[in-house]
Image 1 (cartoon, helix red, strand yellow):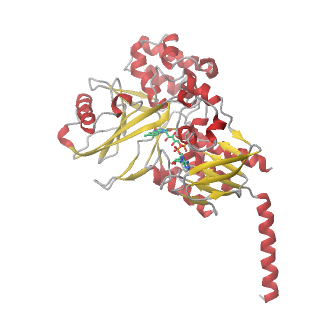
Image 2: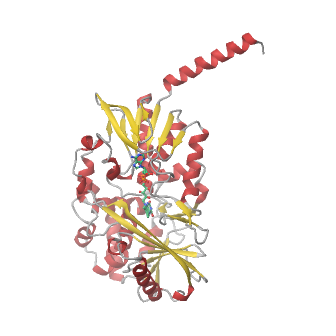
Image 3: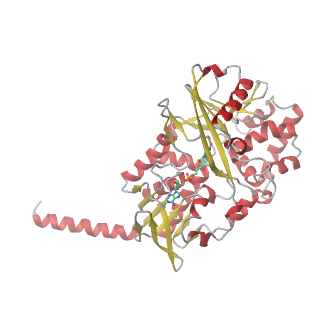
Length: 454
Ligand SMILES: Cc1cc2nc3c(=O)[nH]c(=O)nc-3n(C[C@H](O)[C@H](O)[C@H](O)COP(=O)(O)OP(=O)(O)OC[C@H]3O[C@@H](n4cnc5c(N)ncnc54)[C@H](O)[C@@H]3O)c2cc1C
């Protein structure tokens, strides 16, 4: 190519780039959890320019994994369960080529372990939906025939309930109103509610619970299947999402905390961090949790609400390495127990207590004493002599409690202020704080920006 041709070609590229820049929006995404990563992936795939700012040295927010220094095993900050009804999560994992990292049940199958050690299965067998789910309740031997009929009755009535009409009722009040016996509340409903809402049935809003039940049980053949990450969470989605963003020219900056947001005429004009100031952008998406958001200068004014209405619920995870593992199921739900779930990872088991206010402030020794006594009671394959080592993980502000007060309070926050858009699990009013609500919120924020672009 001659010198003249090279100059002509370079000019052409510059003109092309300036045209692209005109239509390509520049977006700052604050927070590198599921909401921030899914938002960034959607934006960058549609041609936007993305800078993601994450305060901590690692991505993943409240869902990540790390290497346990004692054993060298990769463990999660807390076992995460997903369900077939997590449509946005599945789409996101497909987008970043990570869907094969999920272990998906062939059919709904949950072993319920009673205090006497007996196990009863909620299992949908191979029948077609919805017969399979109805059959699973009819065959759920943990409940008496009369209790099963009442449970079935309520499932059949689910479509008649409007979530919005139930906001002011707690889950417990709703279940009692609907003639559910104390026994089926304790054995079935409480396990479902604590597992999906990370909240006590006396606190969580029935509106959110009914929405969750509809998604799981009325969402089609796949919706009620449980999905578990095959590898650590960071390997499952953090690394593939970061790679997806970087490969398409996006910038990810960790260890950079946003400290201030400056508004002028209802638009954000500057973002300050502990290291830099940013003024070159078209949109800003914040995906950070509400309690952290309220600490950012000038944001608390636009939030303009009583954040003390929003309460958080802890999750306690206990990982125990065993010299011999004879647990036969990949997970168990424990009924009427301090421990709610046991996940079997082969060399170690992970025990999860949701809504763990009663345990989170105990010492490790006290927690282990209770845990050993509970496991010995429930499982004949467990003995304290099998324990090689353990690791206790406490997430004090794991998720907000989806109470009626929190719904009313969050409802007062507008989801966008000019070019400043709010996302994160807490922005989905009628969903609990989950992977799905985080991903959904991130993708919705991206869609909003792309809508402006048209
Ligand atoms: C132990 C545990 C178990 C869970 N189990 C389940 C489960 O089984 N199933 C399920 O679906 N969900 C579960 N969840 C909930 C799920 O993890 C969360 O709902 C989801 O990860 C929230 O994602 P997010 O992106 O909205 O928020 P986050 O993950 O909190 O991400 C926000 C990010 O913003 C960053 N940030 C904060 N302030 C700033 C700032 N000023 N500047 C820049 N960055 C900032 C944070 O460091 C963080 O990385 C669990 C959560 C925990 C903690």
